[in-house]
Amino acid sequence: MTESIYRGFAQADLEREYNPAANIANVGELHARRRARAAAAQANLSRALDVPYGGSGGQTLDIFFAGRGDAPIQIFFHGGSWKGQDKANYSFIAEPLGAQGIISVNVNYDLCPNVTIDQLIEQCRRAIAWVWANARIMGGDPNRISVCGHSAGAHIACRMLETDWSQYGRTPDDVVKGAMLVSGLYDLEPIRLTATNTDVRLTLDDVVRESPMNRPLRRRAPVFITCGADDNSEFRRQSKDFAAALAGRSYGAQYEEAPGHNHFSILEALADPDHMLGRKMVAIALGA
Image 1: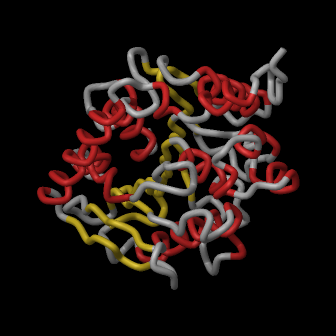
Image 2: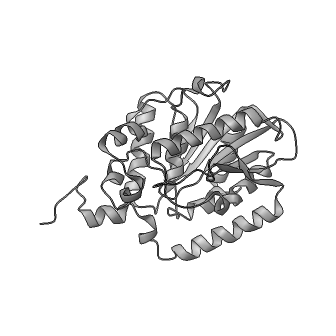
Image 3: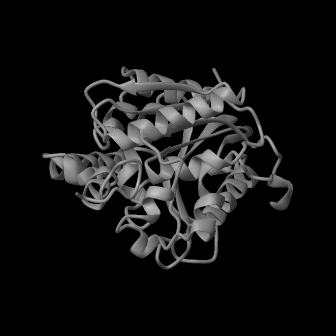
């Protein structure tokens, strides 16, 4: 009999559940399509690329301008299991936002194992503080900042809602006005038990500290949680469980799956102005 190590999953099954690429037959095609669309967005949109917000090479961001002053700002955090990917592959997320007069800021951060998750989260907090301080310069409204993230980036975006911003200069406590969390991870215990942890290096104490499921949010900002209906069962369960936990704490979280989408194709739905997710992302950024 194969031994269960987490919620009835044996080691091999748990590895598959937390490795979405292993379960999608056309994952290479999806990645190629995403890179091509991102390159086109970078060529066509008004932008400033690789703007430093911190001292290390990984701490840079891309700004896609909205063409007017006092624009809302969405800050996007990419996924990649905290150890891979790059903001440049997600530039197309800016397209539906820019069409509605919203600035898009895509954030890079140093990757594990060069940093810990705790250090990575700290970098992303400083990115938000930087955006708030420089919002007027980029044509944005510092009082209309929202966050969005995909996969590990959804975990990062969620952690921004826990932050005591009094530690970050004059950044106000309500700097983040809303969040969209896409195919995220909110309990990191299974990550500690998989091969991903070779680079991420979570301990039991880290799991408690870094898991949003265990932590209260500081402010009741609107939170929309989603994943693909064809995503792995554990990503769907984590999303549903976290939405239920927030709703039970009166945070007003919403949850809705995207039919016909998996862990990676859901990014195309997010960037589609006619899709429910594209409309929802724009609405959160606008504060609607």
